[in-house]
Amino acid sequence: MAQDVTIFYFAALREQMGREKETVSLPAQSVTVEALVMELRQKDVGMDEVFAASPRIRVAINQTLATFQDTVKPGDELAFFPPMTGG
Amino acid sequence: MAQDVTIFYFAALREQMGREKETVSLPAQSVTVEALVMELRQKDVGMDEVFAASPRIRVAINQTLATFQDTVKPGDELAFFPPMTGG
Amino acid sequence: MLRVLVQNELFDMGAEMDRLSADSWGIGGISVFMGQVRDGPDGLESLTLEHYPGMTEKVLTELAAEAVKRFRLIGCTLIHRVGTLVVGAPIVFVGTSSAHRAEALAGTNFLIDRLKTGAPFWKCERYQDGRQVWVDAREADDKAAASWD
Amino acid sequence: MLRVLVQNELFDMGAEMDRLSADSWGIGGISVFMGQVRDGPDGLESLTLEHYPGMTEKVLTELAAEAVKRFRLIGCTLIHRVGTLVVGAPIVFVGTSSAHRAEALAGTNFLIDRLKTGAPFWKCERYQDGRQVWVDAREADDKAAASWD
Image (cartoon, rainbow over all chains, first blue to last red; front, side):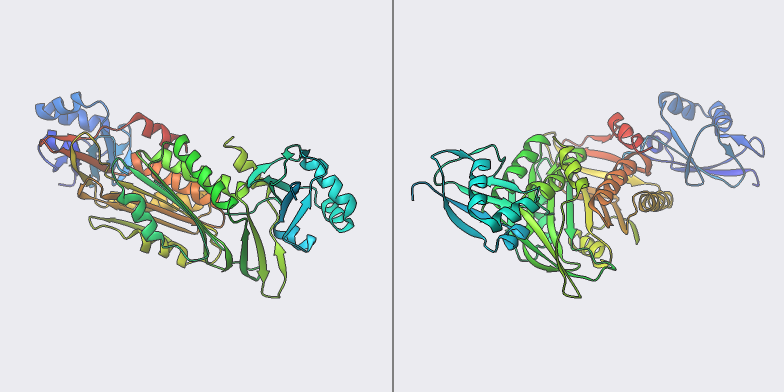
């Protein structure tokens, strides 16, 4: 539980993933978004296909735009989504 | 009468001239604004002083911005005024 | 649709925005600029706006038509008040609508820049101590207007 | 004064403009942009705007604060609607006030450009034939946003 992070998916990515939210365990106390995603894709073929087909996925950590090189810590709120189209 | 033009003055120039409108006779059937002004200033010391003190006077002929090199014809409506400050 | 008004009366900004968007087919963006008499520490009480009746309407209509053509506007509203306006009072309303935001925004910017130095309006300031001062043209305004040449 | 709202309800443009100008001390210009669901020949029926509750308000508030600082704004209002909006319906209201027109106009332009690609909103189009399509991000919007970097 102490290693858990919450992940949200939005818009087309939410539909493709078939869920809007999930809780996952971090493989280590501190990993990059990239490392976490790689680990999750290895365990989840559906997610692997979705992420492979969407080269422009954006990430936010704790409601702030981040990059796949940024670090995720236990308790963080992650979100993955397509490029934003507001306004 | 056939040689007459109407002249309007606006804003600070109207106040300095002490009038907002006058009718003058053209010295010829077709003269430039510059020639007309020169003629009027020779006859009117007050106007000469006002125009000498106001280097940025603008002119409109028939309600269209013009230059002092443009031609005035009988029946035209002239207007002299300072740079505009709308908005 | 062009809408050009020169009047002493206050305009209704909400109604003007509604009018710009009501005619909504194809409109994606509406841009508005409103200028008002700036209240400040200098003791300004009011502005009196003089204009050249006839030429004013002509110049504003030409300006609106040029903006419509240049920025592919769908609607364009120009309202300029004249007469005496106290501090805080609205002076001018510029509104544009277009399919995309960039055109509406640029159109509004163009119109207010050009209107400042190209339409026959003159401002006379009146201060609390009774002084009355004709506003000088600003070089920055000439530059802004010329930037659209 | 900052005013940031994310809501499904329609906003009142006149009231929002009045609010920007009411707080009038030192304000010479108010600039507003309003974006609406574009009606067109393609059979679009409505847009559904999804967002990231929490992050949306945070990003819009940061954006407004940046605009205030960068363009010396006096007031700044950002209202973005979410949920399902039919063609012709207002989506977004951006309003700024400042001492001089250039800052208000630039502030509004900055805000709408940055908001388009930097705030967590996503549009899904629904057509009369039942098709639902997520709107693709436009490269031109990325460029417009980057022009303020």
